[in-house]
Amino acid sequence: MKVWPVIERAIATQGTCVMVSVVLAEGSVPREEGARMIVTAEGFHGTIGGGTLEWKALAAAQAMLGKPAATRIITQSLGPDLGQCCGGRVKLAIEAFDRASLEIVQELAAREQAGPFTVTNRIPGLSITETFGEQRRTVMIFGAGHVGRALVLALAPLPYDVVWADPRPEAFPGAAPSNAKSVSGDPLAVIPAAPEGTLAFVMSHSHALDLAIVDAALRNANIASVGVIGSATKRARFEKRLREAGIDGERIKALICPIGIGGISSKLPAAIAVATLAQIIMLDEALQVKAEAHPPRRRHSAG
Image 1 (cartoon, rainbow, N blue to C red):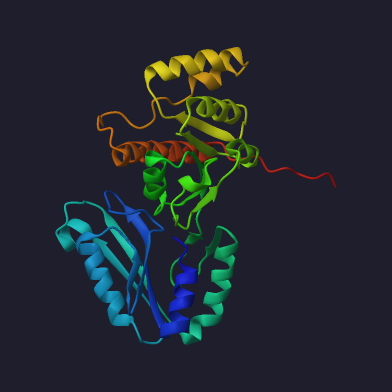
Image 2 (cartoon, helix red, strand yellow):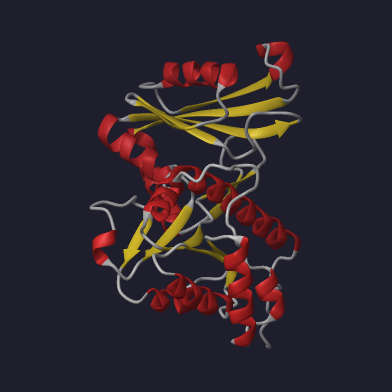
């Protein structure tokens, strides 16, 4: 969730806003460091984990609405202090903003709109580095049938940029989620533009088209994982055709077919979408862990 544009809008329209941030998380806690909740006179955005902790934090934030800019630091041991089963401890920063804060908030909002960024020692009394903005992964969905529609809707509230391709313009609904870009015409045309780490899931109206899309996606090294809806029989046929087409054997082994996590037997489109969404999240998190373990080397220019 982008927080500073929300705060900017709240100050501009209501003159007040409060942000609750988890700045320290130790042991078993509902949310991680960096989780945030924005509280306005009209409601709140985001979550720091729910339960008694969030209820008390929400009450403290609401009490600061309409007051001069100020910061309150609260430390809570979840078991002894709040009676929650979690045994961890959290430190919250509760920051109130008013119209006098607008200039610095606008600057931070512009930085966040431009992409993820970090800032150090922003909160008085806390020596911490905060990260704002979203690292959004691209997910390509090929097919606007029942499962494709259900999957795109399931992805709507999550931090993914969805490229939704189908050669049939009439197959798309009248409206799509704001994070989804609908592309009609040749679906193969979107594959060369896939950013590094893209996840591609194929569920078109045609097995022949599925195979063509899978072939093109597997040849693009920027696409980290390729999945195609189907059965074990479909997978075997696709593997044979892909080998004959000269696709790298390791890439073929990594092909996901059938798609979705195990343990869900329902064939309802929404159920398939849920199982596939869980798989997408797992693939995304694995790529994040890999990236953190092997960050790109910084290039030094000759001088």
